[in-house]
Length: 144
Image 1 (tube, rainbow, N blue to C red):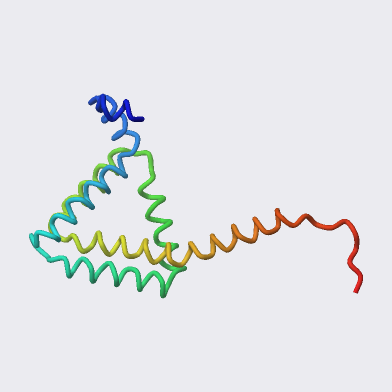
Image 2 (spheres, rainbow, N blue to C red):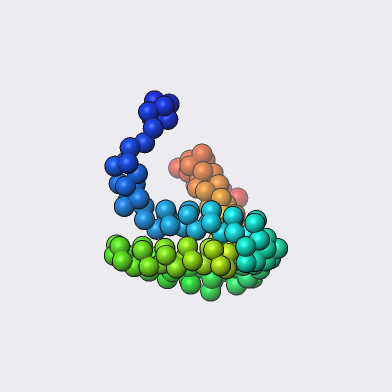
């Protein structure tokens, strides 16, 4: 890994990575642009972005089932292998990142609220599974 940092990355490797992870690359670029746009107060300031991120988190914590359902449909649409769809959605996100960055931060707030709602359940489920593995079931019948 250290040698890779010293050598650098070739253009071909970058192109292959971008082809494989098109949606992710567009999202990362949009978030960087949205952060710069908000910080430098191009069209809307950071207060709008922070407010919409908080609002998105509050909404998804309050209505987790509806937001999770909506996010699943959105992710299913975005994960389609059609590159044209990915480029169009990515381009729209980049334009939104410049002019209306608070919309991307609202999306991040929704994801944060979903994670806040789901991670404790996931951790509790893992803990229960781990507890079941550690205590082997006894073969003898327990008498009261």
